[in-house]
Image (cartoon, rainbow, N blue to C red):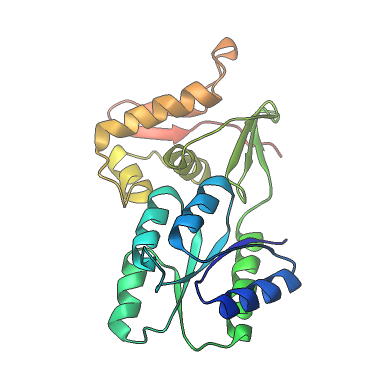
Length: 229
């Protein structure tokens, strides 16, 4: 399985080198030189990994990381000449997943990408279906289909649905859902009801009395779909 990789590096030679090796490994590669262009790609394309330099023109990499974490859980590897331990801790604390100091070997970066690639393949099935394929989930691309029709969910809607699907035996309180899905948000308990309502509108079939999320009154919510064999 190839990955979609976004390279955000203003130093042309490093950008080109990362792009060449990424494509040689079979990945689809997007290459930009500033944060603004990166944001455009992130909003348009499904990116699996971002290789991000911190020292960018106009907008620093740290600011871009904060923006990305508002809209995506994409894996972010920071490439930076900052070698202080505090700098590493700072970027990890705001949402980066890994940190490689410059100068780096291209082999080290490619090895990390291979590890991420294996993790994506091993940890997530390619397709999960429920109720005789009425509901289909494609975890690798975070896509949801109802009767083979693509249903657009927001980031948080998908996160809540996936949390419930992943643990069908658990009844989740609102506070539990907030802790798992809204760490970077100011969401409060009653907002969860709104998200559940929106998800139901998109995936339930009222004509068949089919609802995928069960309400346990006074407690919380539980996934009620029947997984296909």
